[in-house]
Length: 195
Image (tube, one colour):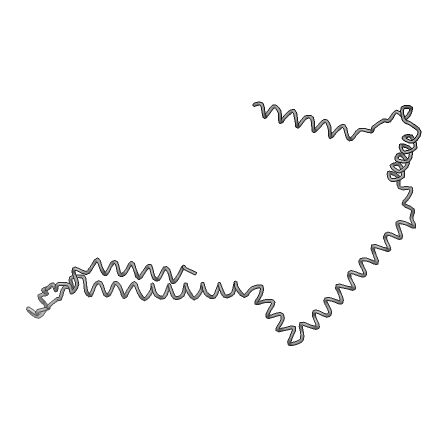
């Protein structure tokens, strides 16, 4: 609370001080010495001369306008000459090579990064598209019971189907196949996303 009150007082003091600077200061010239009076009168004359537009005659205004026009023409001519020379240089083989070098300097790393990212995503996606069906096929072939159907004809329109179950080749290795699949997915993710 104390700091808030102090801040408000400080703000008000600064505000009133700023408004006080806007007022005209009146000097009692009767209390000034002779040298102080001369300095005061010189300052007052300089202020009044600076505040009026009497020192701006039409000749001076025309002079400043011509100077501005001359500066504008000089800049325009200079830039025109630079543009013309750069255009002529860009038509030469050295100029074309320089444009390639400048383009490479500006965009080369971005182009390499983009190409690298596209290649990584392409390889990663193709490994997933090929790897997941291959893993499913391997697991079904080696770790899942595969029934074998034997069909026996019993009549003209009838048949008897019997299923015989074969034990899987690697029934105890199912967890290892899953771990190998997770390692494969991790490697594909590293190939795809690590730059």
